[in-house]
Amino acid sequence: MNKSQLYKLLSCIFFLSIISCEEILIVPDISKEEVTLIAPANNSVLFSTGVSFSWDNVKNAEKYRLQIAKPNFTAPVEMVLDTLITKNSFTQQLNIGKYEWRIKAVNSDYETPYKTSAFEILNNDDFQNNTVVLNAPSNNLITQNTTQKLSWQTIIGATEYQYQILDSNSEIVKEDKSSTTSFDYTFPDGNFTWKVRASNGTKETLYTSRTLLVDTKAPNTPTLSIPVDKSTTTSTDINFQYSRTPIAGSTEKDSIYVYTESALTNLNFKAQATSPYNKTLTAGTYYWYITSFDQAGNSSSKSSVFSFTIN
Image (tube, rainbow, N blue to C red; front, side, top):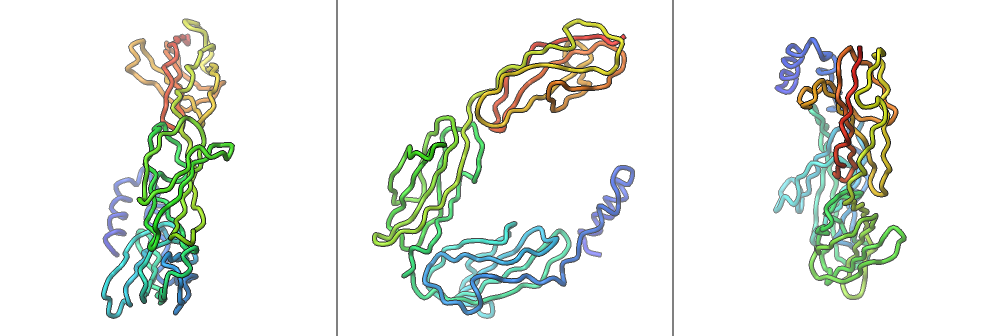
């Protein structure tokens, strides 16, 4: 039993009353599985310094350890890369030369053997086949921060980079060239696509693109309706109702807060809600309000606080 399994066993004993030991202890053994390498194939000769590595997924693997050595792992002059990734593909810029790359799949307890393959970058004549790897911001970012640093990885042999920013109608709102690999841009609210390609003066790569949504507007303040403020009921099944006019932008959600005293310090419960929202409560007096949030991190003002009593 390795340390990880021992720790899980002790955790299982400690949390026996609330968590299934079977759920804690069983981690699939992938040690006899094999990673199937796709590209670059063994002994490939490449004519581009941008190398796209790919392999088949291994069932029950959580991550993959990718290593690249120059010229090989037997007598390495340089360990070029040693990284853990969750996807089954990776792009790396490499200088002209001979290399070996290897992959193994890992999870919390087990790992497969490495699978190794060799390749050579003969020249960069196929410059146009390079892929510009975008660094930040992350793809499909939803944010309230209008100023973003857009950045990407260097392409070997590139003399400049051409970038564009397009709005939701695919109209170009910014287009320029840069000798560096980043620039700052202040976005208005809305959906945007930004893309970059590299040029060596005679050849150009394809554009690589990402999208982002900028939303700086807080959701509207909800308006409470039922239970009516200071109302009394004999039913313990309470139907909360409210309204809010949505604002275009990121997805908006509502949270209900219910307290048992007017100082709003003794929280009875809170939950994500849509109107109407049902909850069974016991006899007593309650105070409730709604606050709305969106995916960009904006929040509305707190609604009015209503009270009601269950006799």
